[in-house]
Structure formats: structure tokens, C-alpha cells
Image (cartoon, rainbow, N blue to C red):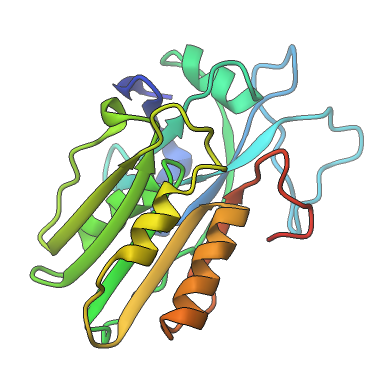
Length: 246
């Protein structure tokens, strides 16, 4: 790990480096990488073999999927990942809150979670703060002048980030302001009330699984928008969300 930067009270940006990142595949914005933390008492993680198989006797290790916020190749490759922080509620969050340069983590992947659609007339991006790294990466890589309508839910105004883009961007921030993450309906209400552009869109939604499902059904069934593979992704589940909700 190279450096840690606190972007907001609840978001940390961590930059990783090392020879293993040289020539890293970087096909689409917001690809998913699995981070693997060393077992308790170990200095380095044990990496899986093909098919996510670990060697016999490998101690239990923590792993979680994260969005690649940025990647720079070259003589000194650097990988950037933004972590949503929620205190000590979760191993990854606790680690990111206390992370210091020099720490070692492993990785597996990446996997594509966004496919560009060059023929789309416009793009719709929706999500909570867990989707914000991917939304930011996507906005940086869509072509200049492309129309984008984005809705982003965060805890409060202090969690807004400056998002660089060459797109024609219409961005709406939604603040929960004390309502619980994963059960706030303000994002859903903002999208359902919005007047969306005409034409064929590229749609991408991510966040809490039940919230994503409800938005997907609204956009597909009530708006008639095309919602295809890897366009509506449940990144996490609220404790009350049924297990069968993807």
C-alpha cells in the first residue's frame, strides 16, 4: 500500500503499488477487484489458485470485492480504490479506517461490471455511496459531450465528491440526513419523479440489493427502459433484506 487519503468523513482513498500490478488489465471503468487480507498474525495473504481454490491448510482470511477507481500503468504502476467507511462494523472498513502505508494485501481479478454501449443516446447512472467510485470512474471515461443523468445517494452533504468529466452531466445528489442506509427511499423517489431524456439509454444501477431491485423494476416495467446483464448490481445487503434478493 502506497498512501491513504481521507476524501470525506466516510470515504478513504487508498493507493496500492507493486510489481504485481504491472500490465494490469483495465478494459472498462469500475471493474471489480477482490482484495484479500492476511490471516490474523500473518504478514501477507495466501492467494487462491485457479477457480478460487486455496491450498490445504490455508488459514481463514477476509476478502471483499471493491471497485477499481483508477489505474496507472508504467514504470511505477498504481491502483486506486475508494473505501466506504462505517467504523468497526466490518473487517475491511476497520482496516481501511486505520490503514497506513506499507501494509500488504492480496488481490484476485479483475472482473468487468460495466460494459460501454457506444450506440446509446445517453447514460443513466444510479446508486448509493458504494456505487460512487464506479460512477466517478465511468464519468471520467465516457466520451466528451455524451449526455449523462446521474443520481447518487450519500449520508449527507459532507459526503459529496467533486466528479471530473467531459460529459454533459446532470447530477442529482440525494442526502439521507439521518435515515438508515439501505432503507432510505429518497433515491428511489428522485428517480421515479424525474423526467428522463428520450432515446436509447445505457442504464447502470448499483447499491443495496433491495433498493437496486426496486429501481430496476421501475425502470424496466414502468419506464420501459432496457435493463440487461450487469446493469443492476446489488453490492451489499441490509440486514433485513431477504437472502434471495440478488
